Length: 351
Image (cartoon, rainbow, N blue to C red):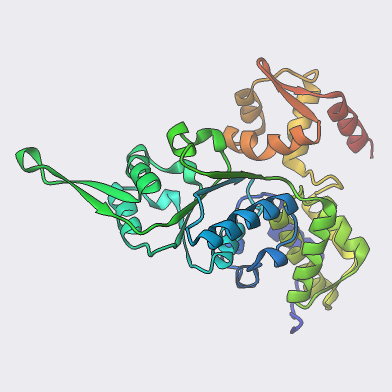
């Protein structure tokens, strides 16, 4: 790999990246355009690291479907962003020896959008709908007979000339992915024969993913550096790979080489203000605000106004990880700082 030549210094590198919350688990523009990540997705279960129980269960369902010569039951995958739901959907298609159509629910704005999509499916094909909780009520109504009976009920004409027409669809498998299981209506949720939750990755699995990707992008990384990245990646491969790429950038631009050492990783994390538990300035501001107000309870909207951050971002991105670490808890009266959270704040600001 060619070494990038530039006069960028360390302080410029820090300033250029401080607008990006690098440990955000949602897809960023750089993730969408990263051809290395997209083209090197695992294609089969044997290449996919982590989620061993989920893979075993899915493999049995797939093998049974192939044995009967049937399409797989509709599958619902849910969990936090960045855990591999899209990758798993593509793997299921490969294991079933079929193709997969991928679409985001937000793009299905009108009923005709889903109708055109269903009419274009082929026998045993897989339809993957990401963020399926965002489907409109009308789109869901059209999906019900398609999922149950593989039929499409259409109303044609207007007023007195209105007539109903039923179109038979090829048998297919719908794979839905969501980060908000509770936001999916009960009738739609009940039509999925298989439902699996994706959990956060262990540091050991994240370290394997980091090593694999470093080989793909021709970067050398030592054990100490890889485990450091794994421990502060919040259990999410997408964040781990993003941190690895930022470490690669730092190595190539500042150090003029392709080796990621623990020293480089520490400097990158310090520039991004990410500590050993994967917390950044927004997380600490949240905790510190509770601490400064006697540990709470404080309502989410009050915290949002005080931090000048969107309440939905705090609720669905910041809070879940803080709760998993046991630093805060949600109560009917508001958010409360736990004893562990108080210890963390005291230790951090005493440094």
